[in-house]
Image 1 (tube, helix red, strand yellow):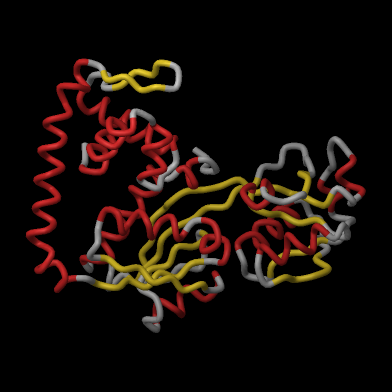
Image 2 (spheres, rainbow, N blue to C red):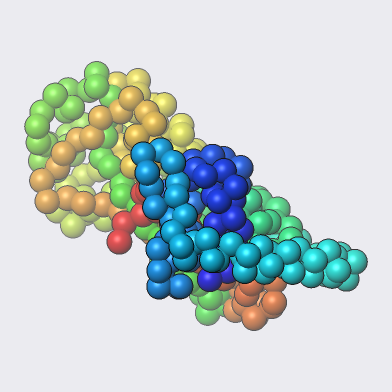
Amino acid sequence: MNIIELKSFLTVVEYRSISLAAKRLYVTPSAMTKRIQRLESELNTRLLTVDGVRIKLTEAGKKLIPYARQISSTYDAMKKGMSSYSQQFKTTLKIGTSFYLAHYLIYDLINYVQSVDERIIINVKTINEKDYLEQLDNGFIDLAICTTRSNQTKSLVNGKLWREELCICASDKHPLTIKDEVFLAELSAYEAVFPEEGGYIREKAEALFAKHHLPLAVALEAGTIFSVKNLVYSGSYWSVVHKRVLDESHLKIIKVPNIKLDIKFNWYCLNSRVQERTIEQTINHINNWIINSDLIQSYSLK
């Protein structure tokens, strides 16, 4: 149980609606529901029931209200009383991340961290995933959130975060998308567009084709996954993109039998800095954010 869950419960009580309470706290209804469920699990009792579109309090829920209000009020008073001291300890953390993560997820993380720890101010720097080590070494960033890299050195420490599905795809104008299934050898005969060499998705595709002793016909290189998406949409090429990117585009999946691809994300920082308080706390916040974020959970592979 934490203060966020208790405040969420009180907001649901105030609005008598999960969706309205979610809007008030700038989270999704699903995230709000999970908060209430965790609170119920901790207390080992139902607090709310749904009657049509209205929320009804159980007897246990009614009993919890004064306790929750008292805890919330005490917490707010504590924060107010300590605010003059906490201002002295605000720290800025520079996080380096990819174009994909910056576009879809990183600002959800920033909002989460600000909601649970006002002392940490996050600045975001979008970087090429190949450059994260240099950026960390030179102090341009304090922490990297990026795809899992194979070229890790002893100077780095990392932790697993989550993984997502990758999809082989093309425009509906492409001849491969009219087929129910396409074998890898057939796919190999068509031109593809990928990010430049050294990127996770490019390396994943190259390893797949090399394993089957097939050439990967990369006709064009693009700087970002969004450039890849636009070039694929032209109808001349196929590629591999995140399922999240595919779902918001007009691209179609090319079904290749027995081929499943995923992309893994880790955090990275210098080994000499991993025990710094701000970095340690931020990593903990990131792990909690992953659990609570619908943006992550809706595409995360178990």
